[in-house]
Length: 138
Image (cartoon, rainbow, N blue to C red; front, side, top):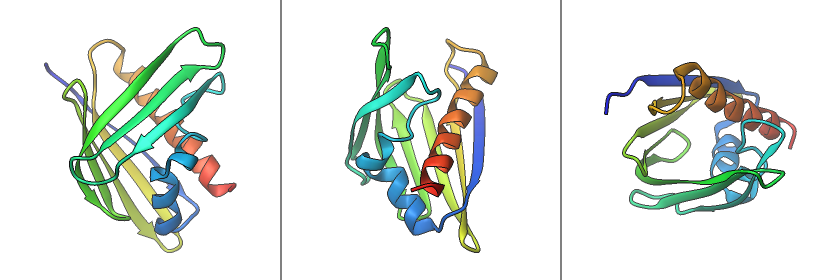
């Protein structure tokens, strides 16, 4: 399978400790892990360690569609970097860079073949934008 690497990023007005916590704790993930307001993430489990599994349920709020997003962690460097492999073999890496009280979050992921690249980029960016908004206001 040929993939393109896609990168999304955002600078969050919060330190790396808070950003790491909000990125990884299920009680926070359920509040930001969706690309549009008519979707939600009602369930998350996260075993944050190499070989551990992240599992999140993403659903349309009207119940018309949903899917499970499952990954296995390949690398976990607290407050710095997370890499994982998705169920279909694609890879993703997120880095957290401290910028004087702020944190730059950069995610690079392998594209999939079902949707246009720009749709994938905008969907992942929307989720990252939700993360930024949630983290800065809570």
